[in-house]
Length: 514
Image (cartoon, rainbow, N blue to C red; front, side):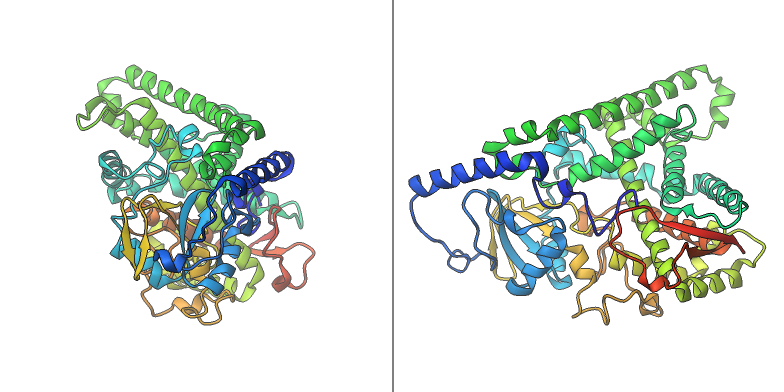
């Protein structure tokens, strides 16, 4: 796959690797020796300070050495020993890790306002327009205004409905493309690439009124590659964010250079989109302007001209476009995982096909208006998000003041990590949690948009994803159409249950038109 959930990129998962490992190790060793020689020798335990329990921390690097390539697994394993609320030191940054639904509710509902902030990071400075996007902006007046823009202007039910034809057209084009490939005998289709291209086309037509690849296919491909890279950077344990006095290592390792390069490329693309929109608007007459179907950049440019609440600049528009692109990537990942499980569990795929056919018939395509009647489809998507949340550790929160949670003292400026992956697989909550079983959702009303803490694929509370409903709709629509139009088989695999769910490469499957 282009971006595989269980095998996260090394830079995203657990700290320095490759050529940067030696200078990091040497610097930390030197600082540790200095610390042992100069620091007063005293031992403060978590219990004596009122902090939650947690593993002993090393000088300088804290507990960072305990996080490997799959940090959500490592944190789950540590939680088995230290409990669902655990205190760590990541470098010099105090961090609490939540690994149960009850504890998640404590932090994201009861104490939501205290933990509504985001910690400053290298990525938010260099990639996200210095924290101007919604997802990484610190809590405050600016963030509240931006969230209002998203909820009231960009992601409202009316605005989402206005782009229904775009989504339906792009899905039809994708189905036709797969059908044409299937006419050349038993040909395996790159399912990962097909889904990524489809979601990307929907996102770009919604944002800019055109596909990213219409003018230059190489630009579209590079843009998609850049989004994957930036996602890794945002989730990375960059040394400077956790041990500030050796932040120069991020410069030496090329991390900052990669961020700046990715930012500059995206900025140039976004600038061209904005300039083109301004020129097209000038060239349209009043009558033509009235008939023009607005895309989201049109809406944002109008806001920049008319808003009085804040100084809404091009950088703000670009930051919002950046957010939308990242959201599209997470939708792609979730849809891809759902297809993975359809291939691995043919009986689930067949049951889903039967439901879809009973509602739309064999000779009709699925429409978005049909989705609300497809209970089993919704169960399949929920089960996918339970096992494979698009962001397994969520973006970190940060406390805004000292507080007490579950009887433990949590200092101001403490990072909060919610292990969504562990919560979705908690055997105390889910029966047979490792089995893909959509039927577990039939007849219950588990909310996945942040009101029920048994699973949190879109976060919860003030910092929950405002586009959760739109994302769910896209995943359901794309999956329903692919399963309804084709029977899918894995090339050269007679036992689908053996499909490797830790694979890092693309999914290839053979489609047969139904």
